[in-house]
Image (cartoon, rainbow, N blue to C red; front, top):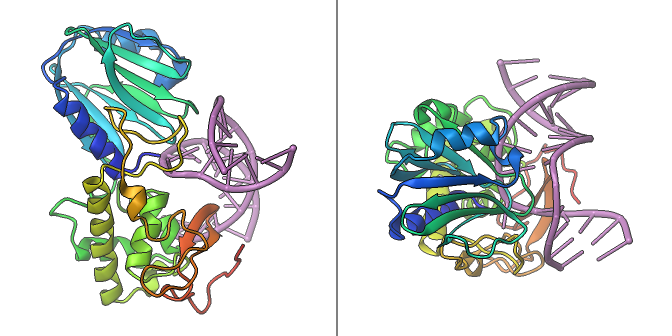
Length: 285
DNA sequence: AAGAATGTTACATG
DNA sequence: ACATGTAACATTCT
């Protein structure tokens, strides 16, 4: 569910709700593995009584900065959602963690599939040091992307999903970016020419910015779907050009969008705009 | 009712 | 070291 634009939208929503400066007076871990490998008691002890000094986003992580310099890192994985509600509001069965604030509200983590992970770290920069560049940072240039791809024989799709190459892309925005750049997801990274790299760099930034502008992508209608901290759905699903549009016309050329499997992930593309590489392991589905 | 699902990681095999 | 595949996590939706 949440890729960079969704996590960014959540972070903005939580900040706007005015939680910075509030003290965390109680922590309730309702699904212990949410804080694994820490134990709920040690997590709660490290966080309880601390004041929220800030909230940042790094890739798909939400970083709750505490006033003592430590931080809580939250990764929402597939179905994690954040909401701010009145403390003591009815708790539904999928709430995995709660942080009660000193102003009568609580931060709630709801996660149907239980894949989400929260952990308390003494120094957050260490915890995110292995991640690749932030694609929307000024420091992310075509040259940086080119260097990350150079010499790699991996297929573009799994490479872009690798958070060490570029941090924050997921299945939806990778498909969208490859479509915009007219690149086939099975193309080997090392075969890109400078013009391809420039197009891919621009496409990555464009699709992420569009996602943020539209408040993220909310597919389907179920409880497992993405919503912002205020429970509102995103609107970017109305602007998707290939993802979840199998069989519909390509907005650029009209050809039918196709869905294939690349590196075990559902992958959407336009068979006319995104030419299959000559010697790809074409195993279509 | 089987299969897929917005994510990541560990482990195995080339 | 690199590339790829499988399983695991756990539940819901189509």
